[in-house]
Image (cartoon, rainbow, N blue to C red; front, side, top):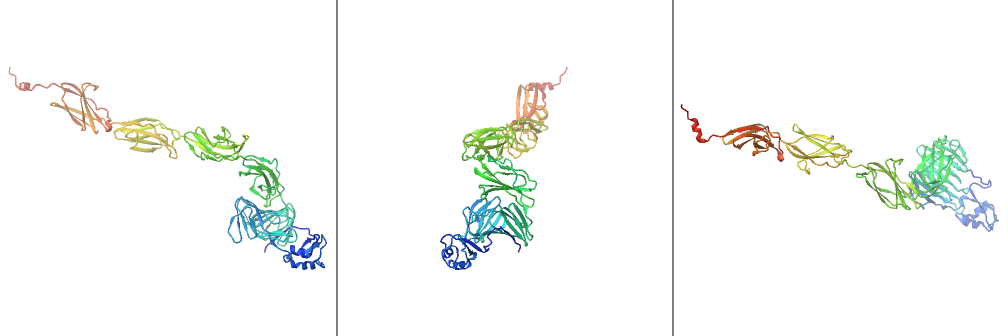
Length: 621
């Protein structure tokens, strides 16, 4: 079994055997009284008398050293007390399941404590020693015992993985002390400030001593560590020679008061350091750890809004072997309150269509007013709109189109602005405007529709129907351009267009505009007089026709007008004279075509019936 034994070199009187506890008598002490007070079996006091060669049980002289074997002393449980918990920390009793660890919990032995990332636990032992369990660590508590009223407390721990820091009280010899087992080593400690880092993956134990002296032994080799020294030991190998820990980081002008997030500190770079560890605690002894960060740059930032008050920063350098150096501690005050309000509207990425933006937020404690800042730039470098508001929770701003960033801060009773909240953004972007329609041009029986492009439209939607309301369109089509050609039957139609955004949201419709598509004009008009009728015929494909006869070329003096569903008609023969004839095709909705070419017809006077026979008789001279 590979063991590393670390023990503090204690300067004990040479005459006191290591297995005996030394008791200094008080006036009036007797051996039997000492037995009642300290021995687990008070009747064993004659053994003490024999060991110390005392002839009888009488009052002993004051300030007399009495040697008492440790195995005779009364042993009692020495529970540990949880004094601080931050983050996700769980505990499992020896015979139970994991549950959250809470301040005030008593650990009597057999418990396992797990700390999650960014989580800490501080535990005070019966002798006053404080153990600070670091993030992502697993620690099991073994024997926790006190030797009656002797002041000797024995503590056994098992650090399976992770980091442990301790400020151990000076232990009373010979049985008092702390023993920490790990998968590769055992550390025996008395009265010192130390750090242990057990890397379960690489199976390397790193130990650093800040106060006192520690002996490190492994593979029958021993290294003595003094204050400010450290070593590392890999499983199966002897400990490396002691080396000096890196000095405290040189820090210039660390802030003593912080009034805005992030909490930020910086220090000078040390070429020998490959990283730095930074911690924040609520007490100068760092038994109430709150924040921790590991950084490869000489700067650290936290966004955590701790309560206002006094805090302590601790930073230390880490060398190439992973040994952590000596601490640089710095007190500072956090003055963030009143905190910024929590915004509820507009939601991140929300869109305003008309630019009338409503803001809403919570009312934090101690806030006497607010400052609202708006800018088209996320860093609020320029074009900043600022509104100082009373203790209200709503406000409205009219803003032009664009992407806007906004943030808020609370005002204290003096009207001073405190911490800015997180920046959020929204967009002011109207829907596409109604397009302006062009002409509806008809060529070769096809309808050509055009309109003007509108800002924000990626596509357009066309609707064509028979009524101006276009409630039931005959055609509804999405288009990528601002023009379209349609094939429609002759008739009267209405059309309108609207813009579509990339996500499909639609803008306003244009006003409906008519399309008049006339039928083809009739052609090949012919006329024949047949008695009292005039027979007309023509060619065309319209559902109806209107035939007009007029005495003038402008058809302002129409003498006959007839509607026919066939391409022929009979007109009543008018009185003699010259007439003009034309035909107009009638489509759906009484849409008229252009008139046919005009036909001129001469109507002559008819002879009386009684004159006809005479015209047939030959004339003889």
